[in-house]
Length: 268
Image 1 (cartoon, helix red, strand yellow):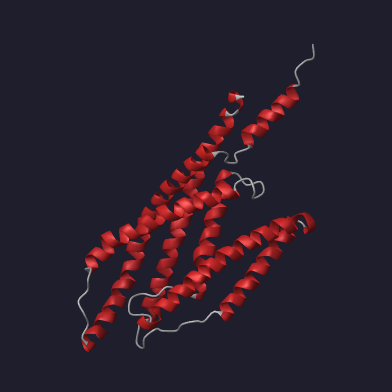
Image 2 (cartoon, rainbow, N blue to C red):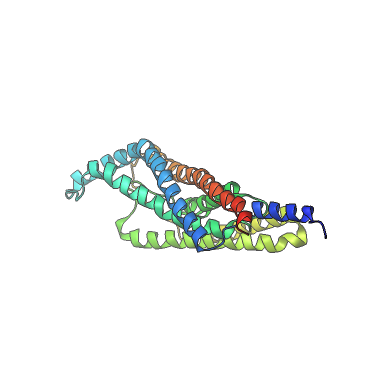
């Protein structure tokens, strides 16, 4: 009788326990639900940042706008400022958090196991940082957000289209840089491939910045401090959203995938 190969059995069990890549629609669905839950929690934190940091500059911008409206005969607002700063703000931020949480969870399913030796938590943080940079920071640097009273109403359609074009370009270029880095890594090494892919991404984004039109529509007399406080507040909101999402979703995904990996040998 041949004795069992305990080393092989141990290696197989260890490999199964450490293989946390999502497999099957049930696991993807579970990660999607956890992503939406993490997005909701992140949305609550982002809502707090938006309320305490963003409402002051918005109120100051509205006061500036109303002063000009009184001079030129302004119209009546459809939604009161009290509703906008409470229920309206909460609804928008929380729905946004749930939506992007679900989308990020699907991106996580693709990235997990394909991003080197990073585990579930680290991969969640990588996805969150990548989303923050590609979806918000890169478009933000070209088309920063403006508070009320800043921006020509006649160009709002053009500005909106160009902003979303910048978002799409940023995401596609980031994905392309990741793919290029992975293909270059076996030839020139991981570090050199990462540097080359990042340099190429910066170069192409810089070209997009140069060729896409810019807008400078800050009205005369608008307080520069209010403008920058608003823009920094919006950046802080997004940073809070994606940081909390990465931490919370990473923990939830780690528990789910580790539990499935540990229980897998018992089902063989």
